Image (tube, rainbow, N blue to C red; front, side, top):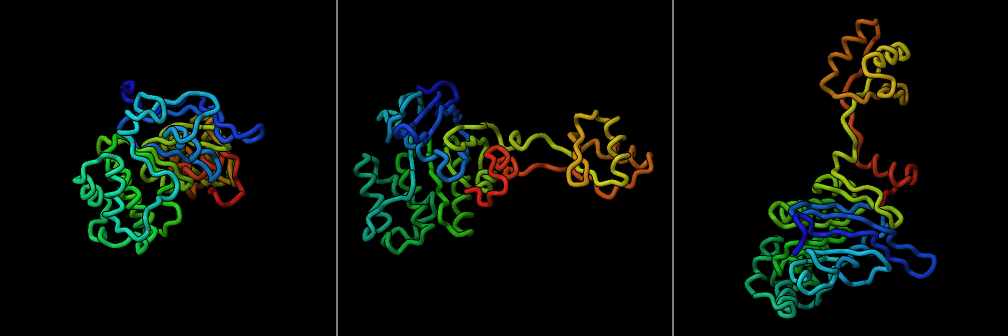
Length: 306
């Protein structure tokens, strides 16, 4: 059995290809029951390699992993896991429904699950059409339907919105959000910050094979802060430092960034106005996940996160 509320756990999980290529470097991640966990990193960071190790598709060089309380690839845990790793592959001239029938037969899944899975991904109306006629978004949704045939406790999805247009991405996000809204646990890998930000409860950030952070999105962004634009700036900083302390005030691009609860904005404004400081802007400020991600992975100025 899995320990408490932990469904996936790795300890120093490492995968090396030859003497020079370190694909995953001592990763320690924990996925809890009932959450949507975002595994975030640039393309080539080691996400897919990690997921393949968790599924028992490749062996780690060192370290350990546990999935539903068992070693990766254990048949007893795999029976409770649904996974879509990289692009789904189906018979092009079979219908969506018939493709699922083939998979269900090999997996020993009752045929009643086929219609339930099609319903969950909103493909019932197109289930009789050939897979070759499907749009990319429909193909991805059929791939998710295949992972749902076993009604799994844990769903592992590797870049499920890859290649989709904005409408298809929004549909897939809605689907993942609905799949992760009950008792099912979802482990989602992505290089898309907006995707992770919108649907995930916790995030693990991987860069160059190393897991560099694991936390909620809110914790990664850091606490709430205030931005102040005022003249003269030196006098404004002096007055605010008296209130908050010098360590909680920074000057950035001609403004003050304050490590302060937004509820203190009124008090700060009164202090500055009373000191004959002209306040032109005073508002809550929150770092975006993109800013945090670029800072963590040292990619600032490189353009595309993916």
